[in-house]
Structure formats: C-alpha cells, structure tokens
Length: 69
Image 1 (tube, helix red, strand yellow):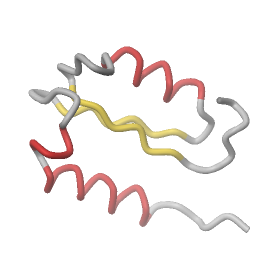
Image 2 (cartoon, rainbow, N blue to C red; image 1 turned 45 degrees about the vertical axis):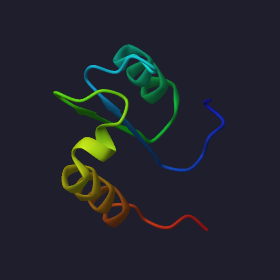
Image 3 (cartoon, helix red, strand yellow; image 1 turned 135 degrees about the vertical axis):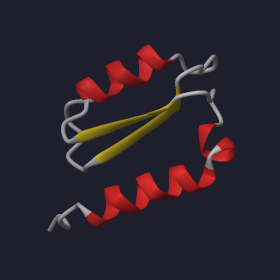
Image 4 (tube, rainbow, N blue to C red; image 1 turned 90 degrees about the vertical axis):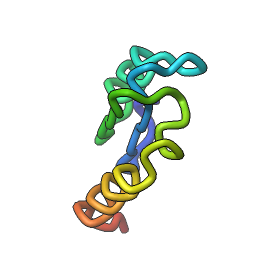
C-alpha cells in the first residue's frame, strides 16, 4: 500500500460491519497522502445514508489536491 502515490480518500461509517472502522483507519495509515473520513451513525453505506455529507467531503478532498504530473 505504501507504493500508492496518489492522494486517497478513505470513507467508512463508524458502525461498519462489512469493513470495520479499524480496518479503514489501518488502510489510511498505510497509504501515503490518505485522508480518512468516518461518518458517525452510519455503517458500510455511509455514502448512501448521508449523501450530502459524503459529497461535501469528496468535493473538499478534490479541491484541496494539486494535480500530479
């Protein structure tokens, strides 16, 4: 995972069962330039349960990144 060179957004719900929150945290720790977003009160489908919040995080993530050559 350390060979990933692109900024990465890791998104999960706090109550994730399919992908436990701790796994998302570990993933974000091992991918350089990763940003972790954990939605409280949501499970694996946090992006469907809170679509506006998810889109806001994605937009902020994309806006803050300098394009790679």
